[in-house]
Image (cartoon, rainbow, N blue to C red; front, side, top):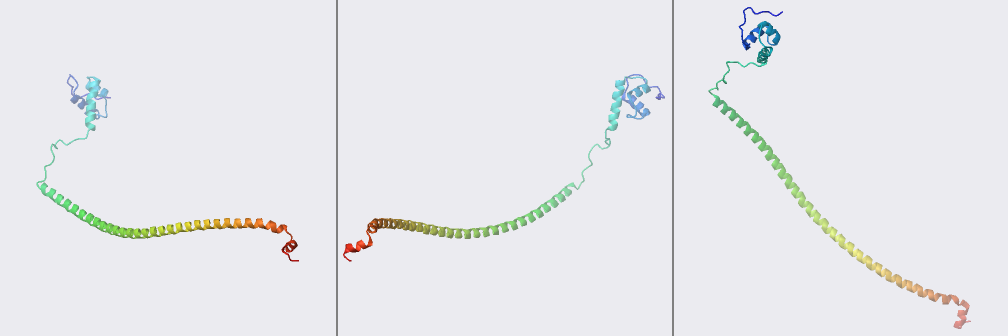
Length: 194
């Protein structure tokens, strides 16, 4: 059952303060509803009561901001000294990192320069060897051309000799049938020997 207020509530439109008073008695904004508040107040529209109740609930759920905190705390009087100390420490740290990085890069640069000199020397040596190999290849090509020319000449000479041999064999074949046709004894008689 809803408690009735101990003192009479003034008539008139329902205010936020009226709803706040009822909510305080009825268990807080989340522990009651607009109908209970209207019963307790004895008047007012449910829409107005619900509007004020929702405003109280929103205010309760909102994080509180201290009322005394109107401005930021004053800056320390030695703030410039603090900034200078931080700046000096940062600068010293940056210089130290820069020096370490510069030393590392210088070492890498020297190493790369040595590697480059070695590579250039190796390249020069390879160029000399390449030129020598090209000269030997040219000599070998020249000798191969000479050998091909000599082989062509030998083939030509052999072809000529072969033609001469074939011609000789042909003449011998032509002579051979005449000698084969004559019997051996007749040939002696023909020469005048008995």
